[in-house]
Image (cartoon, rainbow over all chains, first blue to last red):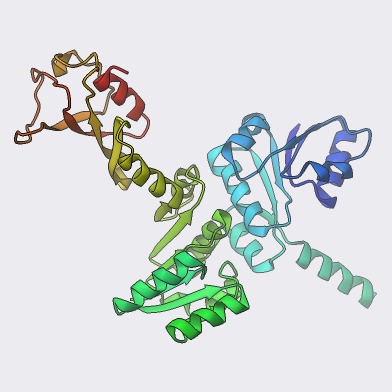
Length: 132
Length: 220
């Protein structure tokens, strides 16, 4: 599978590493080259400097051939915009997007974007652990 | 009309001021506390501190009864999300977004924003008009038809001077609608009209064939 990840923060870098080990073709995009230090030292994928809400940068990163696009920057709106560009402009078959804000996650899920809110998931998980 | 403005920077502030003068009900949503206070002090209590992309904030300011939402923050992605939340969550009839990156104009249109204003493009267009050597000037965009009205000047050294319009390799979808000649009345060109140096041609074209039109008419 060809996977394009936007945002090389902790989660992005870790996901890239995991998918790379499984043998997937991974490209990771970040506006800051310094973020790539988080990638595992044996990472075989491609790390590119570029802004994921810019059509040209996405094209350079090979979005036209990507099977999956994952938006994992720190900005909810940036993730949402990139996810919509991937889905509606480049027709990427599977688009996943992180939004910290649970209300925005609900809204964009209803608009057909596969959005996850770490806030909701983590709070729920903690609650279950505490009540156990 | 009740109009909500997202972003209280320079654009948001002056927009609010102008719309208030026209007698509209205005509310500005601004993230920064100091800036928000400044706007309230200057314009009266028309500014709320908050994140205009958040559903909760927009619910609080009564977005459900707004006639229009205008997002003019400096970040394109924030403007997009504010407009989409207003549209899909609160059914605001008209949303307008500002974009800094001119490329986002088409993207926003595809993603359902009613009107997109690219501040960068507008500045470029105005500067183009002031640069006399620039052969093609944008006069008007007809947004919903994907057409634009442009002006092309024929320089004296142009190889097309003396040619008939039917000899020009005009791109598909481009129409020469008017020729303005110095000292003369404007003329409606036909296939046999001969181009002269200094002609100002008003034409309708699509953004894609703009360059082809310029080359066809000026010869370079």
